[in-house]
Image (cartoon, one colour):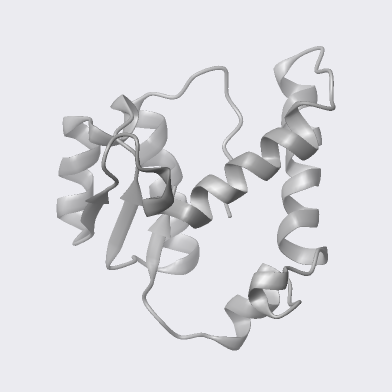
Length: 133
């Protein structure tokens, strides 16, 4: 999973992150997200169309439609954001990135048969999957 640590995020920042992810991993067939203004913005939708990525927006009030993303966000909040005190944005970026690396690279996940997300991804390449945000 990807984490972009900012005080707020606008459509241009979403596009920059998506560009980076597509360069690193290739373009997915779909992008599943909630209906946050940063994801439904015209610029983001134009970028997705140019990249050949279809959108799958979850219905408002239906977090189960993006269970993986919601689970990740909940764990990030419970295990990192709610237990740390950040003095500035730089400190938050360092701590959150350390947590993300542990989550993706070191921590086995029961839902992945006790593999890390990195191990699971490597075992299932190549595939075009849905990018979840």
